[in-house]
Image (cartoon, rainbow, N blue to C red):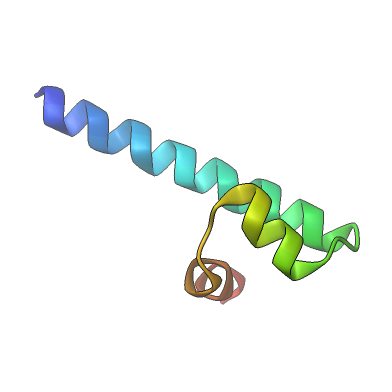
Length: 50
């Protein structure tokens, strides 16, 4: 049960990072800067756009 809760928290944090990254990109921030600040991988960012 605890493991499921932790998985949910991790997933929620990742989704929030993706949402923030998308907004940063829409506002014209550099892609590399967005990746650094959000700690997302290039693949995660690319997959989120699809």
